[in-house]
Image (tube, rainbow, N blue to C red; front, top):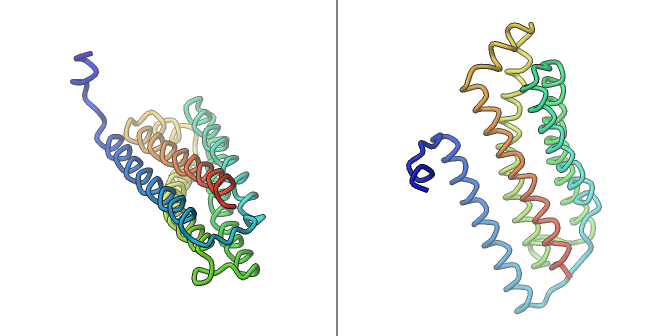
Length: 195
């Protein structure tokens, strides 16, 4: 037991865990307020945009592609690592575009920030989540650029055995899985509590 407490922790990973905990608390607060407002206000529910369904599938697939990219990286299959990282990046960008398209669908249904409390919550909560996703997209882009710079097997191998590079990939992966899981939670929450 003492060894677990006194064991040295990786500071960047610890900071990432703290950041994810803070984000989780923010979204827990959002969902708590959502439920409280729903029970005490006139609530005009509406069907979730079709694009939110599609974006959920896209973000789940992106977690799988990033996990496969990690496996390829550790198995020294660097060509697979590159294209799977690029695919994950493209799926992340597609998620953002699909979310924006979902907001446009809501506007077409006349669900605006100003005229629908349920809609306002969905705009705000999904908007804050998009902010988190954009952070992940940025770091995925950096990871992809670093992968593309490794043009030879030897260069990629040297990059892959460097502990700071391994740590960067691990942190990007942890964060991406977190924001993906967070969206799945929010989507299911909206489905269950929206009406």
